[in-house]
Length: 425
Ligand code: GLC
Image 1 (cartoon, rainbow, N blue to C red):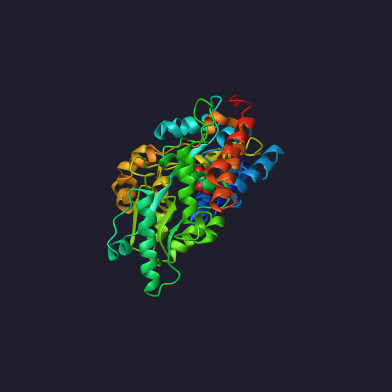
Image 2: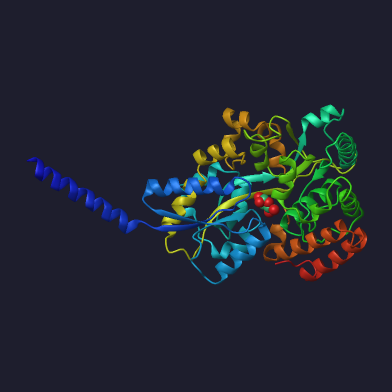
């Protein structure tokens, strides 16, 4: 064969390969949330997959606020629209959105067995695996090691300890000239994030989990009232009044700027606190959230995110392939190392590199495995209404518009009406 012939053949083979790729190439629209470094990571991984597989990706960013994101997804999905192929879904949504999501079982090649069993059960809807776990979350207490040491404080065991310690350090720092210093920042906006924080307070005082697994509305009780009263006492004293409009990133903004002693947030805040340009690098510790009084318990709300494929996608196989890539062990490891996103694959918690980058993932392992689930299983399709009523009641108390007992009495009534007397589903 002469050179020209060889060249012609090579060109023909190349053209055929391109043609085959073009025939299968899909443009996948993926919704990536933009809290902290999430968007940057999500985009880079999706683009790497596109390059490797000859597909295309378009990143769409939904609102950061989980409640607003749910409203958007419900609108897009109930219209049967293919505007989004791959959705980042909150751990509380598989029950609400499951009917609109593709069964991923045919695409997983069995890897779901490597993920936390509870997470897979959570994402299984009538026997269909409607989302692949991506990262898990639990509420954590971040604190300024340097300030605690400087002011002779130890990590608070109870909320009462935290209140006193936060006040002491805040006052001393302000007196020394740092007038921007606050004791404690957290999520107080009227949205799903407040449900997470307030469930932690209530559960830590032994006040139950709003609706119990048997369907009983338990929220009107003295311990829950005490918990809300405690949180309300922080507003305007150790927490800025603006906390009533804080979501995760607003709280982190204050802490990251060096202007808060304590912060309640999810694990993602760790790698940002430790980043090269962070003013609090090396000064931050991570602990379990305090107990409600000496008889209380440590309580962290379970959070987390999965990736799912819309049933209305025109490219289900390519979209599912992207989901399997993004939730794979290699990608989860990279996200843990660089972004402190907790893996959903148990074996990764034995990985020395991951534990070195994120000591809390090993030290607080039990916090993640024993975290408190929001009452999604029992309330099923009504969960979002339950949560909405709960966060509004909590917000009324925090902002001083209601007393805890009054707010909880009204909340109980509203939840009993929603459940039609305990029959949630
Ligand atoms: C985080 C959690 C999610 C929770 C949300 C509340 O995104 O992963 O489960 O609902 O925060 O703001």
